[in-house]
Amino acid sequence: MTAQRRVVAEVLAGEHVHLTADEVHARAAARLPEISRATVYNTLGELVALGEVIEVTTVKRAKTYDPNAHRHHHHLVCVRCGAVRDVYPTGDPVSDLPSSERFGFTVQEAEITYRGLCPGCSAG
Image 1 (tube, rainbow, N blue to C red):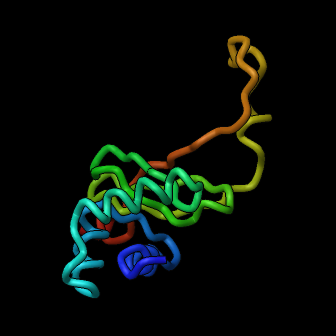
Image 2: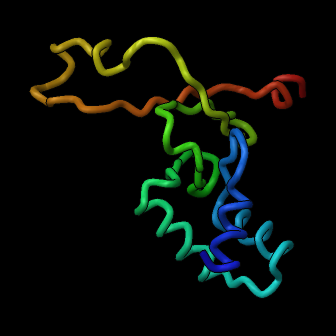
């Protein structure tokens, strides 16, 4: 693993990490000043292709990268500031979808996004 790839992986480490490519680049450049934006974008693309990172699209923010790729989860998104958190609700959203609402599809998985206000935005 190159130093550039290692620093991108380090930046993405942790819980509830959902960074844009520009945020990844800024944090990586703080650790490794010579890292280029293209290297960050290419590395993120490779990590997504390998299934190590998930791309998450929300309304308020640019596409973000979620390193929590190995545990199925959904997302909770603040509609004001765009904060994203991983959530693990109980139940199976695939089996909860009535057959009358499947329109003949064989449903394999579901991605659910819960939207609301985070504590910081609720207080203000």
